[in-house]
Image 1: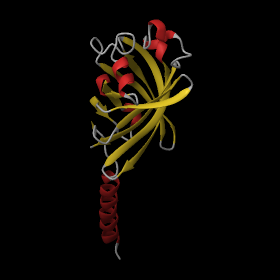
Image 2: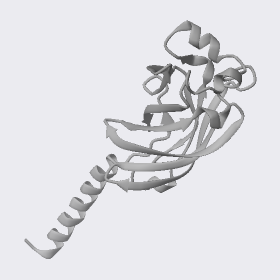
Image 3: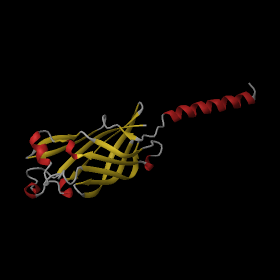
Image 4: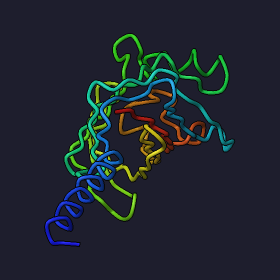
Length: 190
């Protein structure tokens, strides 16, 4: 083969490989609310309890696996969509002592910075706002591509007292523990 044909073949191969490589390097720009879940765990009178939220929305979402440090996310959770495991608990959580849903219908998380911590593992710092109080949190998570979707999984713990969740008689952590464990499985699309 002559050099001219080899150069053309090399160029065509490079273009083809570049096209295939680009097909897997998607930027995820929308949260799939139906496929995503946010759950929580807490302890009530030393009994482990679980709950969830059914309404999750992203007002901003941008994650490029090739440039994760540039990611931006702003997530809203409609607190009235809470299911703490039984109806009496759900009704109690609406009250001012707990989530004060009349004044504070949303919990939000807005990212500040994403850092790569390993192969497919990351940590995002951001502002968690609940009941009119905002605190910075660090949240470890994993990311993997699943077909056309990107799946983000992680968990973190916060102290409910930091957000005035459980005031008055409910400040006693022997009834409801201070630690709230959050787990998420966020599904994003391109």
